[in-house]
Length: 317
Image 1 (spheres, rainbow, N blue to C red):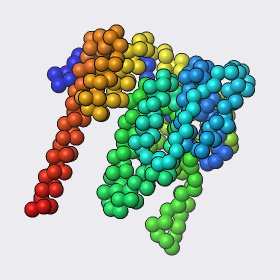
Image 2 (cartoon, one colour):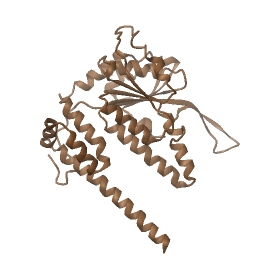
Image 3 (tube, rainbow, N blue to C red):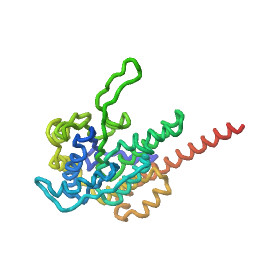
Image 4 (cartoon, rainbow, N blue to C red):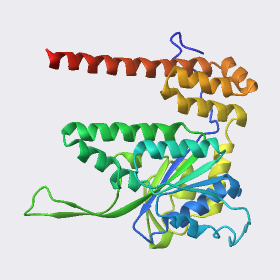
């Protein structure tokens, strides 16, 4: 049922094919990269050609190129897809890299590592520092929100690998306290994930931060390696919902990821969308909802621009 403003489509609740976001964090050598590849292998139903790897670690991801070839139970000669992202590590560059992997048809994307976006060259900390005002962190966090919105909207499962290190509380210089090993990330990020955990001992141990009950048998054990079989089990759980048309869902998620660009960007992508998917999205009301979303982004930008013009006029007066 479409509401009269086209903001939402109200429908009976059914478990449908979803896109999940996972976070593996830990110190160097904690096993997060190897675990991410193993888990992604199963999550693609053992099709490495559907795995994407965004490498910000100076080509270290390429060192794992033969991991799946030597897999204990399902060796393969098919390589996964990889791309290197160098500085500046701005949220916008991360976002555009993620969208490039979506256009390449990837089903599971590993981002190794997210932490450069937070404190690397050109990342959020740099953005905030260069503005030299309280506004700096607002600008940085707004850019970070755009990245989060992108990974929540794309037609891929996402695995974020995040560095971790010991953090301290120095608010009282005379009583500095250790906060233990913490992930290097925005403070609320771990709770945006479908499941998130801190890894240790080369991946043999996990401190689970968040994990829904349905996934606890595969990601909530705390002990033992997370394997490709765990990834395949999660994929089976996702696929066990209401059957969906893959082409239509890919078109929907692609359109959803460009809607924030406004109506011009949305119309351009709509014109590239296959006719069968357009008909399906028109029939179930999602096209109208996406158009309303794109229009809302346009109006929001217009209001921000108008407010900025008004403020500038006041300063001139």
